[in-house]
Length: 290
Ligand SMILES: [Mn+2]
Image (tube, rainbow, N blue to C red):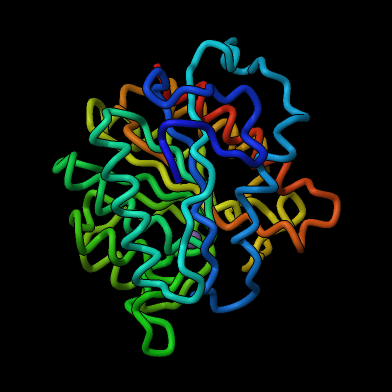
């Protein structure tokens, strides 16, 4: 992982070769060693980059072209296989460096636990940070079979770090009864099932706030995104997710970083998940960077 030259593997379409000149740093977090169900998301970032070659450089939604935003693809952070804590520490120190350079971190997972060290890093820089979390799962467990470093715990950790009233979850349709009860007790916002409509109501209340956006691809219905570890029926369409990204882009919140996680190419038989993810990344670049 170097900042002074681009990743030698495939890079996301149109990424800029120079780190210093770039506004955004795109990076992969190829970790899937705490998942409770199907592994494979460590290969997500690579596949998202590879299929990005099929994207148009122009966004008809935002009337912008990738040429208009300089972003540097730093490649995947080299992580020690099987060592969750050390991997998370590596991610945190990487994002610390990106933020020290005043760049916008745009991460690709990997399982959702990779967002936890990013939240920590963001919160150090932005003490009034809010998090917009778009996901099928609440991710509010304290542990999974006794293990607190699990892909089912990152939002609980985030809520405990930045305060539950600063975390806003959307699209949630799966979790333990206790997770929903805990959110209610501590005053954390959870919108069940839908994303776009509740987002439109919440966004004005976050006006001017620094906001980190974390998107788990499994918020999409398995019909739209089968290539993920923990599929869950009854999700939203890719059209609603795109509209939600655009709603955030058009709002007055100050998006300071974002990620897209849990793309697992081995379950993605016709590659619609990776192709969708790559379009989502394009829209995040063009929408979140003013
Ligand atoms: Mn998740």
